[in-house]
Image (cartoon, rainbow, N blue to C red; front, side, top):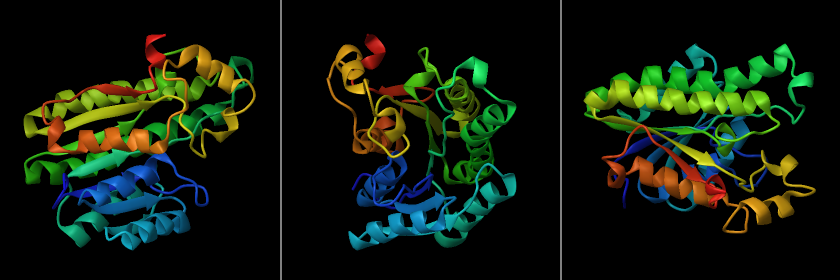
Length: 253
């Protein structure tokens, strides 16, 4: 097992119903590879469902209800992790939402604030309280969920801008924490078949995929989880500050 004796926090480990999300798929895979997983979600039932599935396949996990955009709740997550497992090796910051495709003319102050707060504050606060324990352990891996929207022109202004900020924050974490053997990287999914992406998986999307995605298909949450596993494992021990596109080649078109 590639993550034997490792402890991982997956923030945003739930999903809508029984559907698979990037966070749930990653929590499953990290546990399958031996990690003890702290599955965090603002929806407690969703977190519990993820943990139940992990335990049903022989993995170890606990569920934590938290709104990680609030500093005290982010700290609570780290405290619970340490109280249960004594250390922290891996942090996958997967919490995120997007604004509607309304363009600049309909973007409101409230839309901007909720997207920016959700997509950035959790990374900042969880990392803030995780880093001391990673330093104590001699290193760790922080993985942030970005998006291909951060590189292109999308009609979701707040979301795209927030994910570009995630990329920059990832590089700042990598540069500042490298001396402690703490790596920080990001995954940038393209068109992935997840519940959050469902509203845009309509209409002309199939035509767009045929035009812009060389592999000619939508990605699966497991495609993202595989990259998260790689970045969490020692196999990526000399990789930091990178944003890895999981997009079927869309970024080269």
